[in-house]
Length: 354
Image (cartoon, rainbow, N blue to C red; front, side, top):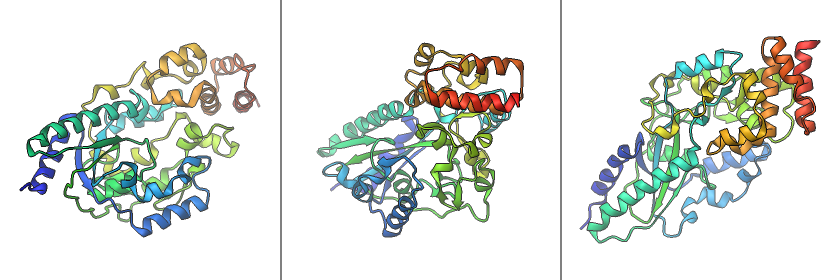
């Protein structure tokens, strides 16, 4: 007779060999309170233009329906930092520097984690073959209507922080999440106690004050949303607060006390590519579209497109210390064939000329 608690332990212990911090088995049920909170969040339109979040809620609340025969969900955490948190604070403090969110400096995490999860699942299949089991699985990473943080929390991989992300007292929060849906009846973990306490650092440091309250984010104000998900003009009231952040924002993680314990990755694919960690704002703006597509191929940044890239960098240049070089750079693209880009360049120039 198979002892599935021992089998679960053996499977989870193997996660580290694939570059993961930890693996645990989720309690699949999404509780009614979490469902109500999510629907209330949607009703307040805090998801902005991310319409996909309002679709397929029955799948979000019943994740086993995503893959026929699912009995267990193996959750993993994969760290992505290649340098300590303080290194990224230094990047942020360099106002002539184009700040790109730390998770996006390397290869597109969707591709990297899907490959590693499939390798992990293949190992599991080979391992359990000796028990005459017929394994079936499907892997996910930020690629389906899944409440990933809730599942990871249910598995015991961490607790939901006031910044809405999964936190762990030994590893912080700067890691990706992924899942393997399987027909194996593995033993689920137990949720852990939350440890934010009275700390509200993430809420205090948010440049645009996007947190309505602890655990509640109005994505429409979030710099990650404004520079990535948003395909329209960035509202003027948020432009100054964006500073030099041209793709995403890490502030609610960089300044979280638990991230002093963040772990560095062993996966080379997450190493910064094409010198993105040292890119100046002027150089970022002067890259032409052909160069940009070549540089961003295989990067998560590619999905925003060149037009939104110029929009974002124009705002950051408007926030930089005035110099003749910045003005010349902005003026060089004043006739770029996009009214949105032209409008943001005009705004940026006005910060320096008037």
